[in-house]
Amino acid sequence: MTAAKSGKRKRENAVTAREHDTESLFREFSRVVAPPPDLTVSEWADLYRKLSTESSAEPGQWRTERAPYQREIMNAISDPEIQIVVVMTSSQIGKTEFVLNVLGYHVHLDPAPIMVIQPTKELAQAFSKDRLAPMIRDTPVIQDKVADAKSRDSGNTMLHKTFPGGHITLVGANAPSGLASRPIRILLADEVDRYPASAGSEGDPLTLARKRTNTFWNRKIVYVSTPGIKGVSRIEAEYDNSTMEQWHLPCPSCGHHQPLAWGQIVFDSLSMVCNSCGCIHNEFEWKSGIGKWIARNPGAKSRGFHLNELASPWKRWEEIIDDFKKAEKEAKKGNIELLKSWVNTSLGETWEEKGEGVESDELVKRRERYDCEVPSDALVLTCGVDVQDNRLEYEIVGWGLESESWGIQYGVIMGDPGQLTKVTSKDGVEIQSVWELLDDVLTKSYTRKDGKVLQIMTTCVDTGGHHTKTAYKFCKPREIRRVWAIKGSSVSGAAFINRPKKRNNAGVWLFSIGVDAGKDTLTSNLKIQFEGPGYCHFPIDTEKGYDQAYFDGLTSEHRVTRWVKGQAKISWEKRTSGARNEPFDLRNYATAAFEILNPPLEKIKKLQEVEKKEPKEIKVETKPTRKRAGLVNKGVQI
Image 1 (cartoon, rainbow, N blue to C red):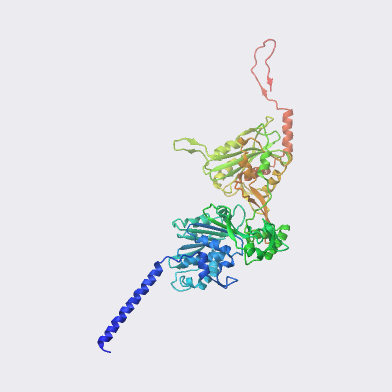
Image 2 (image 1 turned 180 degrees about the vertical axis):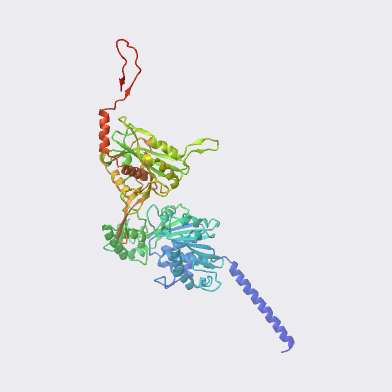
């Protein structure tokens, strides 16, 4: 071959190579800038997702048809018109797997900053190691996008995975720094009913996390959880504000769609009764129908789904019934924890605590008209004081023989309890502090119906929560008037009154009050229906503070028995009504004041009766004057 021909061939090869490189570069550029395929999350999972042997009883290719109720849930998450998706479910329905599908979809087709929240940091680590890592490893289309955390310079850790165009950050709901660290577009909150009420001192973890999504117009927030306690369940609250959809299956006989309802299950035949035609069909006949989601609140902006274990392809009805029978058997023995867990994890429903308490309506109906400031049978007065951030609240209670009681006055003094004495306003006006106004209440005289004048004999001021030092300063110089500082004790079995043996570091006599013991006695007395020993009287005059809100607060807690590791634990807990519990606490404090005083009521009553029969003589001397009409002006006896 001549040199000329050889040179020409080289030039042609170089051109061909450049054209090939250009074509490859253009193809790669097109792939990067091209919009993602128009797939929903369920379609993506059916095409690409592989189930891992470590985390699935059925490893291999994902099939949405295996649990068809999952399709609409996953598609709602990829619907650009929907920002919030709520999934309130039982266990055994595959909720963790469709959360993983959402992650895989975004890593592959729609990169974004993503946050996954678990109840604790330890659970977040377990999720990353046991569920996320195997999914990434076994799903080819994403395994090369997320670098191995063990590889050098990968920039990835167990709780932070980066990929082209986004990242996955895993945090615990108890870690405030993780929740507020970076902006996120996709928020996946798993098991939200197991989150703490506050992430450290930062506040509600869900609120903190949601704020991270505010900068994205196309944000997505997904709440997933088995529910907990009714009234305080986060997932129930979100679900109630959603479309409230339920999975319905058609009756094999009449075709009427209905949810699989526990109340329609027939134990002996392992079947369910149709709520339309009354026909009975077994589990497999029901599940062979084509189901659909039906909304009970179709106008809501967020999509919400509720599903129970009866729909699961991985849990037989026979097992669910056996689990219920075991839980019911334990409940009859007094251990309700298994039944509570069954309701949460099998029915996917909240558990409503039913404790021992009193209904407010019963007390409102039995209010009476005193026609006086203090009824005649009240022999002594005591007072309880509660200190809040922006106010003092107090209740004055009258006591008669055998602990019969009368509500005298319930009051609220608004203002800053951090100021002990007068404050001067901007215009130079002196304003009494809330403590000075309280002192006016405590030193006031109260007139009984028979004319006897009473004063408050003992006062208990709760110093345990707010403005403790100021409360101590108020009580210390007034101990001579039996104004005592108290602090509640929630120790199980603590006596109601624990008298101090010495002054505390602030120099006050601090009484420890076993609040649970006091609440037990108070609730027992509130249940008494007939006047006499222990009965609680209340005035019908709302100006004295005894309105509906007072009675809602007085009955805002109930006594609940829980079984923990085979041991019964009894505690007082707030009901779900949302009423404030200050009236309940204050009546408890006023009762504590009565117990601390421990007055000899029989003796006091006898002395007062003697005073009525033999009034004390008070001699009023007048100046002598001259005789007039045969009468002498003498000393007058009164």
